[in-house]
Length: 312
Image (cartoon, rainbow, N blue to C red):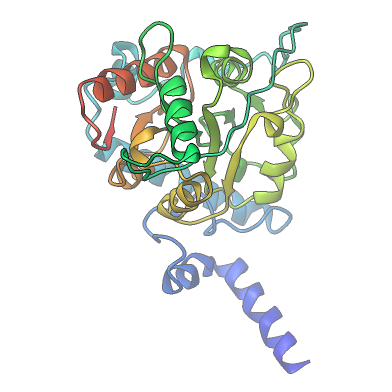
């Protein structure tokens, strides 16, 4: 009873005075300078005004962090202009809340086993099979060099608003919506034969983990598939995304240099790009132009032998 009482008092104080972030920092769970949108915000269901104040502070911190980072020169002109003017939301943030009635459900992505670090001189059948599979999926019919995995952040990349801004469990299409371009990208990955064999991953550091998993079951991608049905690997929990990508790499056996990552937070893109991942910065959520930019940048860089990580 004594241990239980101490634990309850400790959790209460952490929630009331925002000490969760400090404790997590001591434990190495996250960086206290960038965690305001996750564990430093009191959980939903507590004091309304305390949570509102923490959310406001988190928004300001996110804005300051992004403004302090240089604007990637490869971003579309319209996006760069928005950022230089202080950041007005793009039209993609105004989702209709309705999923297009696409009667063609499409073929589900074929899932194949992954393998890496296979010697070129190996003659065993497993090596030959893996080599053929990699060659088929890394080059499209149009000559594009394709990634082996495409990873998406969730908050303000796939959907909006961000979960930490809400006060109760959100209902899809009512309290929260997908960016139209994010929906189109996932639908394309799930139905277009061009992307067969390419894996889809999620890397989110939201503190509202249960809410996120529930929304993955509520948002439709095709007439018969929800988001969770087209995702191969999920890493959804607070903390540095270096940990998220470490697990994605270990689970998929896909090299970092063969991944693309779409995220709206410059802290995340800076960290993850150091691993060798090509990161695509989408400050106002996924848009059609940013989706195309990411795919073309990956193809251009990899076709020239550039396998370094970067943020575009």
